Amino acid sequence: MLAAAFCLASCSDDDDNKGKDGNKPVGDIVVEPVITGNTDFGFSSGDRIGLTVTKADGTAVASNTAVSYADNLFTTDIEWYTDDASSQFTAYYPYSSAGSPATVSVAADQTGGYLDSEFIAAVKSGVTPTANAVSMTFESLLTRVTVNVNNQSDAEISSMVLRGSVPTASLDLTAPGVTVSDTAGAEDIAMYEAEAGETFVAMVIPQEVAFTIVVETADGNTLSEQINSATLEQGGVFGIRLDVWDDRIHAIDYEDFGDSFRYEGDTYNTVTLANGSRWMADNLRYIPEGFTPSANPTDDSHIWYPYTLLLPEGHSGAQVTQNEVVVLTDEESIAQKGYLYDVYAAFGGVEITPDNLYDYEGTRGICPPGWHIPTRADYFDLFGSSSRDAFESEAPSNNENAVFYDSEYKGGKISHVNESGFNFTFSGARMQNGFSATPVYQPTILSGFNCSVEEWYNEPGLCYYLTSTAYKALYDTATNTEVTNIQFFGLMSTFTSALYPEGRLSLGYTSFLTGHGLRCIQD
Image 1: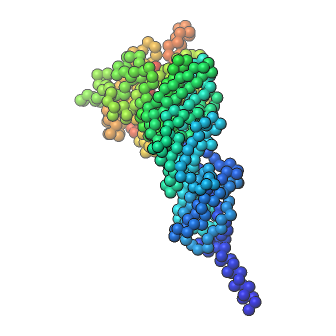
Image 2 (image 1 turned 90 degrees about the horizontal axis):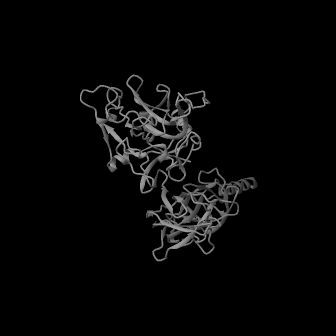
């Protein structure tokens, strides 16, 4: 009898410490935080969240309980309940002892650190008792504004202020989400200087706002400019590139949504590829200040409109004449194909010479903040085929481990590349092979003569996408002193009926005077 009683008591105690599956002991609740989205925040030892646990029948297991972070976990003193009921976990940071906050505010002075104004929250439903940590995904409920500075003035920047946003919002932790206050007024926000003179950051409430940026320089100048109105997304990043001169500033706005971004009023789709790199899935169509696109390839405008081609009746060759070029200036075509840029325009008005042609590899140029003009290496990692560089330093011309390498095509096969969402676009090229050459729109046309994909017929078959990697400067062979051309690598499309009827992508080089399509890759 004693043995039976002992067994009964032991089994009973053991059952009380088992989870729903009957074999996991249950003790105190433990939360494992996962932080996702566009936030720089990370938990540090001693950080506290407010945790609420509510069973499906409305019973409160924990209500705004302060839980501290240590060793990658939030370990509580809250014991699991003994039944199999499910519950909802709600958590937020930073903790408020006054109770779950009804409002959220950002600091007006963030010069000491913008993350002090961050607010993140997580909700997880259908949780049942378990011996494992409950994984909760925390996301920012605010918007991070980042200003990247291109300072062309003679003075350093001493401070930067964002003007025009409301700093307070109501909070709903059931979603979770925030709604900007309709009664509070706008306030100035002094930004945090993340990189001396180069990057300024602030946390703001998501809202529709037309910011005014106010810059003070070390010589006592105060410069300001209002930028385009934008709707700030919860958990998003609103980026601004700011050009600064002695007497004025110019702001270019940018906002990242994860699978797309908005840049100077245009939205671009993006794709993250198998190697983890994130690319624009559309060609750039941004016109920098001081430039005007031209529909005439002979114009030295640095930016040109895209085009398509007409196939004359009975024509059977690979090329047509300039008479068959149809320049596309309508908004729909530009949205699809983007503009064609030479190196000068793409690099942001930089004069390239034989002395500096290798200095701009990986430059941001006219790409949005946090992105750059792809290097030869960026494209080589995707397509695995390239002409050697000017120094003959890379022995293999093929990389069979590249993301899109096709052994049959010895490069990327366009029909397969586009299955990934990369969306290679036939934007053509405005060709000028040296200072003395006559510029033309490249007239190779896709047809049954060289292409097996009928939906591509009449598109330009030889296209170039620009890289920021220089090849070399070419000199007059008679004197070896006069520069006749400077060449940069570009991603090139090739079509032949025998070898590449679905289009091959590889790296070659072309003149820096050529007008290229342009994609950007995230840093």
